[in-house]
Image (cartoon, rainbow, N blue to C red):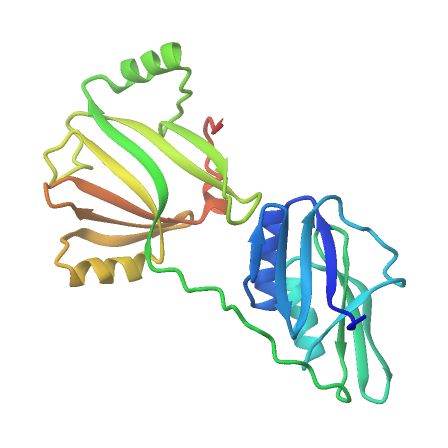
Length: 268
């Protein structure tokens, strides 16, 4: 035997748990496969496996993870959606503990122990993501009779449309159950929304860090059209590609966008 090495939690949504534990421990996995995800935390391994949460009584068989500031760690877990299973307690000698519950029913103990020196955590820091496109946000096109066109697409292709066109809802792989949206809209052919482009269509791209992306594009000589606009459901900006096509850039706030009334179709 060579000592305690690994604590394994079973979770029903492996990718959602991966992100959650990456966030609360501020590390990324050293091992990441569909059947197992492993984190190095202070020289010990936290493993995630697909399956139902343990739902153990938190007073038994709790694994405690060391921290230098128990209050900050408890608050960080709470903000990430954890529940408090056992409140912060001073057990004597300056040693303090608390037990949190992760979103899948696993009890996660936290301990502040000034008498035990924590090992250095092998960080594997989560890499900062460069500003850029994260996926398609929408497809917009001109037509002579938008209502007739929408009716044709509904009757022949089953595309349900509302005031702002059609929208598909899907789930983000990176965050598990968080929704995302892609929009389809027909515009009257005399609209000025596509100007100064002479093309009959415009593509909307979902992006992260819109300001950072605009700054990067400006340094590359890309022409911005108009000013950045901010709404409850996200930020928008427009640029022209080398052939004069207008591109709409959207940094979405999907939890607000979902509140907009209209038909929504599930992407499959």
